[in-house]
Length: 312
Image (tube, rainbow, N blue to C red; front, side, top):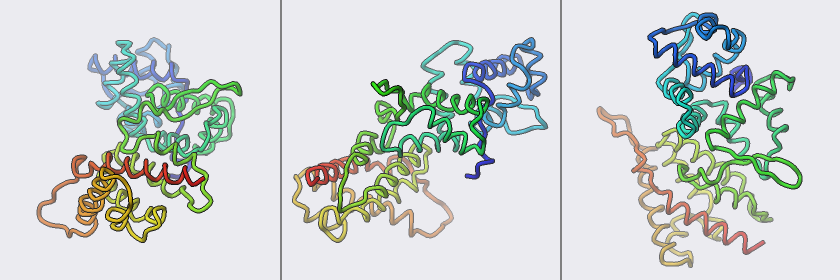
């Protein structure tokens, strides 16, 4: 994504939520497609035209405001739900809808991925500068306000959390939110912590993060294919040439072997169908059920972690 395609909100999160709440009240009263000036007037000049206009593109990219209609906008379905939650002071729903908005925004997904891919916890000030850079902006005071808003949205959506240490406050992905992920962040973080002189795990970690991104965004064809990529990538860790040999010959437990056979047979068949089936008059779309190999993949990653950790 090009830097000039990434837009920061123009205000801090409380003001941004005021703007969304004002759009909701206007839409509730059957007033649609408002300009920044009109919305400010309806709010009795409390919001400020620059604050509204400066956040419009960001809200569009997050799926909260409608596409541009001659500088007039209204809330999308997601925006309406978020606006209603803001007006009702429903903290749980506000968190839920901000998490959805964050997953809709390529920019916020980049920020989340940056935090996830960093081996250590991230300093908030360093993260704000990284966000400003990705938006193609110099890290000036007003730019850093918008960068902080991005961080605050991810935190409010329970996607990241702040950790207090003796050295200060740091940010990391929220492991407790991993239940909705295909691969738990505990496994990814354990892979990151391994220091092995034989195998570079960076590609495996990237593949795990990409599977999570695709699964959260309902890209199920990609999930099925990426599972196969992992299976083709990791056999040397077990001193074997291909994954079929891992499934059939590796001296693991009976449960491990059963799950590896599931991956070798069922997941490969699914991936083959996605990769090699020609177009037809009627297609069967990929579904979460078709690519539900998460438990077996979790067992495989746990074995990799145990094996490489014991060899350190």
